[in-house]
Image (cartoon, rainbow, N blue to C red):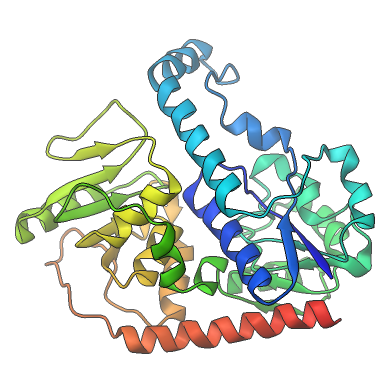
Length: 360
């Protein structure tokens, strides 16, 4: 039995590479040969170009490239090293037109987690819907659509792409409703993000401890609203400094220490060793839970409601962690034993789902 995973393993994004690592390792730990297909997605690569000439103002794109170029190159190299060191990859890199040949190499395919079924990510690339695979080999694990509704002009395409799936697993509850709404008739279940499939011990082995001590860590993906001010207020209350993982060297806020070009191993280390984590990121929230950190989450961002983190904390029965700037800071203890029990149950559920895929 050999399983091939299709996911965003080349994204320069902490959550993307760590969920790819986790799912592949979890399946390998089950005694099944599994590897991530090294697919060359042109739209994904375009996302991380140093110089962006497609913006309304190409001059701004060039200036940003000149300012951030070294950071981007350095970070790309760190992510490439992480993938090569920790993720089981296919022996060769595949172009889109070569993917059909993989049916002769793999017994099963799983489109992995992250926003692989988003209508807005990587050009809505059909490869992440496994359109190249034979129907009997198509499966997903905790795939995310990453939006509140499926655009009208893409509904029939979604239905067509998912019609041949043998097993469909999604990451968010609302995604099930969205797919049923457009007529997808397959049985669907919801599974926890792959990063939760591994214990903190596994991440401890690869996390790099930072030189800094006694800090509030800030990590954002969406544009923050009150995140930085809240972190500064928390740090002042607890006599800590603020460290912000952020690759933008301009528009800095006074009183905050910025860290650019951080590797996935360093990212884990910064969360693991923080006194507090303040974030609006789904995986920033996830790893705060995995490492049993005191944390606060900004739900309302400039990019909209952070519903993925909100749904995750509801699933884990963690309350009182929403960041509200006007309210007093309440860092009441979290019942980690109860949280870990929920995660362990979700892990067993996921293992049973993957066993069903393999045995089927």
